[in-house]
Amino acid sequence: MNNDTIAAISTALGPSAINIVRMSGDDVFSIIKPLFKGPDLSKKESHTIHYGRIMDGNKPVDEVLVSLFRSPKTFTREDMIEINCHGGSFVAQRVLELLLSKGARLAEKGEFTERAFLNGRIDLTQAESVLDIIEARSDYSLTLANKGLDGEIYSLIQSLREDLIEIVGQIEVNIDYPEYDDVETLTTDIVLPKIAALKKRVDKVLGTARVGKIIREGIETVIIGRPNVGKSSVLNALLREEKAIVTEIQGTTRDVVEGEINIGGLVLNLMDTAGIRDSEDLIERIGIDKSKQLIEKADLILYVLNNNEPLSEEDRQLLDLTKHKKRIIIINKIDLESKIGRTFDNSVSISALKNTNIHVLEDKIKDLFLEGEIAFKDSTYLSNTRHIAKMRQVSDMLEDAQTAAEGLMPVDMVEIDLRSAWNTLGEIIGESKHAELLDELFSRFCLGK
Image (tube, rainbow, N blue to C red):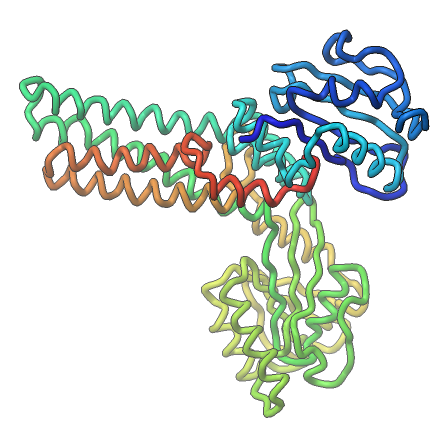
C-alpha cells in the first residue's frame, strides 16, 4: 500500500446541497494549508469542523466547512480531512484539482476502504459490507449488510477457526510427543467427533446461505406459460406499470422482459419470457429456448394458466418441466368463465387485467420465501458469493479430514486438510491478503469510498 496522501470526491456529482471532497494520508494538513483561508487546521483538535474559504491564490473558490480527523481514530486510521463545499460538479472538481496540485494523488476506486482494511480498522467482510450497504435494495438486505459491518460474520469465522486450531494443536502434540496418546485413540475417540461437530456447524451456515443470498441479491423470478395466458399482464400488474406489450397476437413477447419489485422487503427480479410452444418462427424459437434456460436458473417460477381454457398438452409438459422448482401456479383471467377443469396445489387465482388478487399473489410469494426462515436475532447469514464459495471449500476439506480420520490414516494427513480449512476461513476475513483479490474487490467500489 502506498503511503501517499489520496483525495477524491465522495458524493455524487450534480446539482445538490453539498459535495464532499475527502483526503487521507500523512500530508493532509500541509496540503490544505495554502488553500484554506481560515484557522490553522494543524493546531485544531480531532473531530472538529471549521469554517473558511478555499482559495486559488488570491481568488476565492468556495465557502466551505472543513472536518478534520486525526489518526488513529479515523475511518482509514490515517489523518483525514473532509471539505464540505457547495453542490455542483464544477466547484467540487475545482477543489479536488487544487488538492492534487498541492501534492495529493487521486484515489483509486475503493481506496479509502482498502486503507481501512489494510490498516486493521476493519476486516475484509466488513469492507465488503460497506459495499453491500451502498447497494442495499430492501430493509432486509440493509439489515444483513449492517450485521456484516458490525462484525458478526467475522466473529462467526473466527469462532470456527479457533475450534479448528484447537484440533490441529491436539494432533501436533501427538506428533511431537507420540507417547502422549496412541494414534487410534487420538483419531477415533478425540479428533473425529470434533471434526464431525465442526463440519455440522459449517454445513448449517451453508444451509442458511440460500436465504442470505436471496435477501442480498433478490429472487430470480421467471414468469412462464403458453402464449396468450397473460404472462405480460401479470408482469405489468406486479410492476404497476406497462412494462411489457400486451396484445391478443400469439408470440408478441419474443425476448425476455425484465423488471424489479420490492414485496415487503424482499426484492423480486422479474423476467417475463416468451410463451413456450412449438413454433416455426426462428426468432420466436430463440426466445422459447432462452425461456427454458431461465427456468433452470430461477429461484421462483410463476407459472401462468388461462382460467378460460382447458388444460392443454403443452400445459401438462410445462407442469412436469417445473415440478422440481419452487413455483406458484397462477390461474389468470378469473373474470372469464372457468374452463380449466382442475385445481392445483400452491396456486393463486387472479385477474391481471383487472388487478384482482394481485396482493394475494404477493403475500404468497413473501410467505414462500420468508415464513419462518428469517431470524436476524438468532442467525448470522452468509450472503456474499465469495464467502459461500469459500465455506463450501471448507466443508469439503473437513469431509476429507473426516474420511481420513475414519480410515485411521496418519494424523499428519488429517492435519493437512484441517490446516487447509483453517487457511480458507482466513481468506474470507482477509487474514490471507492476496493482491489480486483485493484489487478485484475494491475496484467494485465508487471513487471516494
